[in-house]
Amino acid sequence: MKTLRVLKEVFLSSLPLAAVIIFCLFFKPLINPNDYIKLTVGYISVVVGQALFLVGLDISILPIGKLVGRSLIRLKKIVFIIFFGFLFGLLSTVAEPALAVLAKQTHMILDIVDEMAFIWIMGAGIGVFVGFALFRILKDINLKITFAALYIVIFLTAIFAPNEFIALAFDGSGATTGDVSVPFILALGLGVSATMSKRKTNDDTFGIVGLASVGPILALFLYGIVLKLVNGGTIPPAGVYNPGTTSSLLDITLGNISGVALALFPVVLVFLPFQKFLVKLPKREFKKIVLGTIPVFIGLLIFLSGIDYGFAFAGAYIGGIFLAPGSPSWFILILLAISFILGMAITLSEPAVTVLGEQLEETTNGHIKKLTIRMTLAIGIGFASILAIIKILTQINILYFLVPLYAIALIMMKFSSQLFVGLAFDSGGVSGGALTSAFLTPMTLGVAQAVAENAGPQAQSVLINGFGIIAFISVTPIIAVQMLGIIYDRRLKKVQKVTMDEELEGLIELAEIDEGESDNIVNNYETPETPLEENTNEE
Image 1 (cartoon, rainbow, N blue to C red):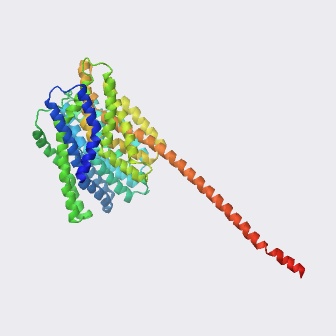
Image 2: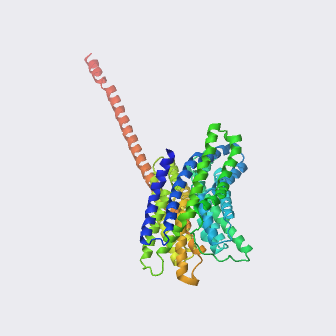
Image 3: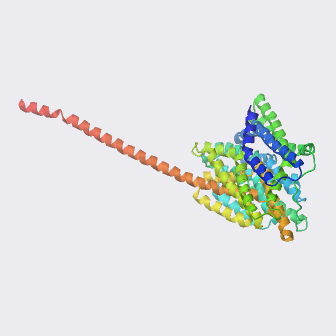
């Protein structure tokens, strides 16, 4: 029953995406009739695969994250806590479907980038900064100062990174924090902050995902610098982005088995010593967790195979049809509108966004509903999609967009509470999930490919111009959520002021009542004395 319920939820959340695809195909039909079959199979595979994946995730991966987070306190020594934070951050990230999709897309365009090396380097970046995030909680280091310092380091490092890797690094950062890693990392952070934080407040609840997201950016910058040095100081020219495939669905699925297994099962293997020495679950519950990895494996395999077989090419096709030679200029407006709708629709369907919304609703005791944060993120990411398309059409360097946006985000920290600063940067990390990598990135790469074909030799490389959608998706939520936090904090202060005024009025009224009662007591005490005096006089 649970599987059917999750399948229904995934299907309903994917309907806006399906509607946009159908609209675009009516607008300009596919040339090859077989592509309709591939697209249908790809769409069904994405829906079914994601549903199975989420069901298994709830049974296996998420409980592992919570159990490990709670048991870390028993390790006592900080060095062990940081090490296992690194290890589980690494392993949960290499199992991330969005990262696998991005690695395939990158290798397709730039052959020197190895898919598995790309995944493990990004995972290592997450692991290092998960360990650092846990260290920050334990040592009570100011979160705002930490974020400001790290993003200054990021943009200074970008000066030395190859241009081909700048937008890709920011995209990779968003792709590493998705359906697997976000719940897992949040569970680790919650376990440590609840048991080992010095302040014992909600301020340390969020921020761990935002800090972890810094790691992949720096890791990929360094990877790009190394590749440039190895290749004689240059990065080879990017190839043509062509996600269409002639392989059968069976061949693609068989080819993905080893990669999915390598990404997923290390999490379970590392959990085994925790189970034996620290967690010690009953055999029945432990067996349930282990068996729960089967639907995760099957779902992830179906999901990735469906994307490879018949989904990625659709995004690229849609990205290119509005810029085809001879198309009227107003087609660009349709492309921008579709980008906004897709950004909103995909965000509302991302499971990681739902998890974050539930955490916020619980932390604020229901004052901010999870739908509020989801809609805030959806609107912000809708505008992010528009900015990404404008960047591609104008071929402006992405740093001219990102530096001002991050500057605004960092300045806003001065006016936001620490709770919402952490939440905002976490929101930026969770927004670029599997569906974003599966559809929006191919669409922007398709737009970049069309721009390159139209502009001729002076056009930017697809690798430089095509990536960046997840970078925009990562920064706009930081601004939007901090704005929500500033409004929330101001309203909270007003409510507290009204409450204090009401309490003060109540105390004044109580004091007046007490004073009135005192007068009555005095009056009642003096009243019988008059007749006594009269009687005395009479006597």
